Each structure stands twice: as structure tokens, then as C-alpha cells.
Image (tube, rainbow, N blue to C red; front, side, top):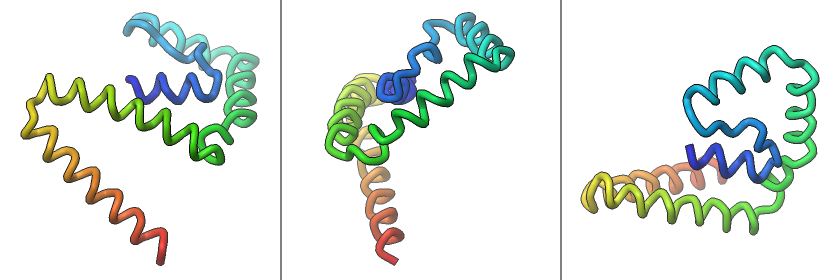
Length: 103
């Protein structure tokens, strides 16, 4: 999905991105059977994970862009009522996460 694509871009692991179900299966089998490729992907993730975990400004902007695109799609596909319920649920999760991190 779009979230996975966002993370692959951030981690520079675009070799994991598929453009169809058939491509996904082919890539999954290739990665599973190719130790050198798996190691290369692992090294990229380890080398670039600070983009997600430590660079909060850029990661937040990228996540905001992802939410903007997703929300736009969601309102068209599911309708505004469902979208507003989703936002309420996400807000509830955010408040719960903040409360848990303070404890």
C-alpha cells in the first residue's frame, strides 16, 4: 500500500516495491531465496532507519502527506461520515498513546 511505499522510499529499499500481485510474488520469492539481496536490504534499513525514528520533522511531513492523500481517497471512496468516524478513532488512539508514553 501507500504506507509501505512511503517507508520503502524513506529507507531506500525500492527494490521491495511491487507494481502487481504477480510482481509481489516474484519479488518475495527472489528476496526469500537470495541471501545477498536480503542482506543488502537489511543493511539499507539499518543504515537509513534514523530517517523514520530520529528525524521527526521530515518523517512527520512525509506522514502528513501520506495522511492527506489517504484521507482524500477515503472521503471519495467511503463518504464523509465514515471518514469523520475514522478521524475520531485515530484521535482516540493518539490520546491513548500519549497517555501511555507519560506513564
